[in-house]
Image 1: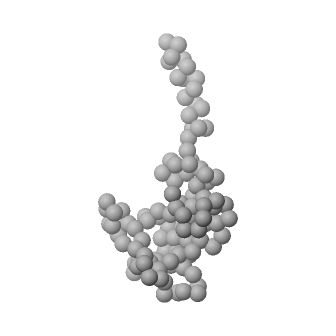
Image 2: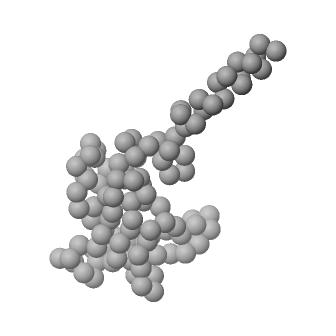
Image 3: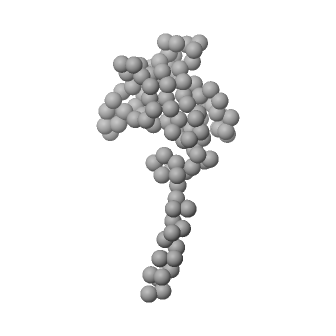
Length: 110
């Protein structure tokens, strides 16, 4: 009975300790950038021009205006049935204009 009372007492505190980031991982403080293939991809006929940041920090990935043809393509049902972006390895790129909160070197993702 004691354990039941303790559980009932602590249960309301559970949401306060929950993760609030996308997919229940981290928070907008700990997730500086979160890009997901099935969320916030702006494209025309599969050619991508922008990718919305899902972390809550508005670090959106955008097509650089200096290289307007360097667009990746959206591939539907790519990895385990989920969409992904395909970068050709030559010039395709999307830039995150100001990600000052990032402590990782450029191009480092974990």
